[in-house]
Amino acid sequence: MAIEEGKAAPQFTLNDAEGNKVSLKALKGKNVIVYFYPRDDTPGCTKEAQGFRDLWKQIQQHNAVVLGISPDDEVSHSKFAGKYKLPFTLLSDPNRKVMEKYQAYGEKMMYGKKTTGVIRSTVWVGPNGKVVKHWRRVAKAADHPQKVLEALQEQ
Image (tube, rainbow, N blue to C red; front, side, top):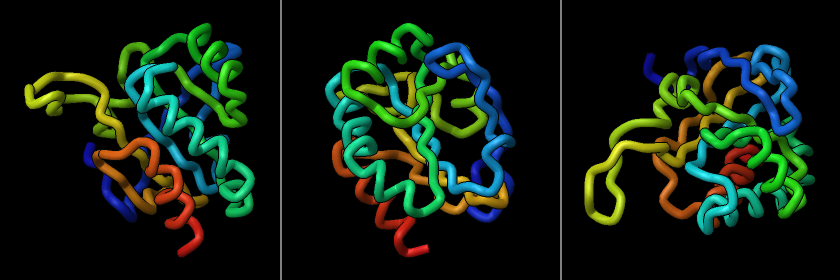
């Protein structure tokens, strides 16, 4: 299933850092920023997470929540969120099933070589459950949260 702006976002339920189930369906009525990242506590992923943390209050003003999804387990997410005081939810997708649905796992270029892995990307799901915007490949992780906030502000 392709992720298309204006179409319904694929539904999912994943575990958060405490092992609680979090579903997209339960967040209906909110703007949901779903960002996919390769790994907890790596340089680019940390900068991106810190960016969402630093803009958290402004993002919330737009009836929005942030969900960070990676293949890492709950223990890793708990340590990562604690270390950097992340106020948003991190979800575990160890089998990469949700990532595949969202076109966030597959072939990519890394250091000039083709490889298969997590594609850093973000999907903004609107209050009606439809995709508002899809950032297919995020090149600069540190700058990306600001771009997401700007898109929310333009709404």
